[in-house]
Image (tube, rainbow, N blue to C red):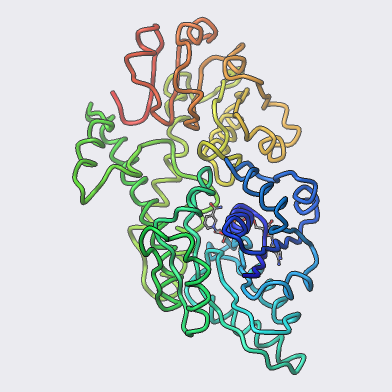
Length: 440
Ligand code: NAD
């Protein structure tokens, strides 16, 4: 099939590359000329494990192309995926300006039947807005060309995106006409040869499914984080509690880790957007408001622990920080807890040396020439001259450090671990004070 993907970010590039991998002809469009330049020169503008190989293989096979030419892109694919950003607007709602701009350019340039697929995470009712935007453009030029609008939310996880796209748990398709359903079934057939994973539903249910999934996952995290703080208070161990409840198949083990808060480009904005959808519909979502409040507070839990050791004023203190990305295996720092922690340490007068395996360039972009933040080439190097170590992202390479060397380097033998990555006995054996989340 001939497919156009509008937006070449985490979702668009992974979707485009994986669809090409299944033998489709794919043209990826982005308005950012720098991204397209990097891609055309054989580079990858984001860090996503395995993506470079899939892109290179399909470019070499002549199935994957990149462009900034909107007209060329619209005329290329019968299926037009919209995979542009939907950042939070000032009131928390999803800002649809990029989605609707993409829809309008499809309407402006299409010359034959198109299936327009919303892959971006968009609020209920967006498919109707996309339909209307395309219709307006067609009317403006007096054209009568058939098209279908489909909602096909994406569930991939950054850091495991290629694998998630190639082997999805489910594929949700909201559609209302047979031709679009037929094409979407054909498109996704190679991704579900083992067993049926396609869930066909109406447009609104598909749109809501994506928000419901992310809101549920965020709820599990905030629930565990609140319980972790209670466990600390009561002298219980949240890790043991996690195993105790996760063994119940109705609960399950996934997504029950206590930590220093969720971040990333999806959970925070999607929780906000769903809260706003509820408010607009006259239906307050009390649970989700609490989920968000708990998460905002959780991002400061490590600083609270630091303050209780060093005092409110951290002037002259210097901290080593391991992990900038919002989670391992990505360079994404959107809404990352590290950003809140670093800002709060600065506010209290401290300085930071950070190490992250892939997100330091992104951090330099975000913090610019901020003199209070320096970077280390290796995790242990970040400890030079530091008062204590703060762990924010659970990268595998942090999991088995030389605790004796850590103790020897730090001015105070203190580790603040926001991801509970160590067995507490190990740092303690080396004479370190180890403060994690929800564990005695
Ligand atoms: P992103 O910011 O990484 O990429 C979006 C891209 O779209 C950018 O490169 C931008 O230049 C481009 N763009 C904007 N307007 C355009 C236009 N009119 N034409 C062509 N290109 C345009 O965003 P992302 O993380 O890939 O997310 C995209 C959508 O997918 C969002 O709605 C997000 O919520 C959703 N989503 C993201 C993830 C994730 O893990 N990142 C997972 C599932 C769903």
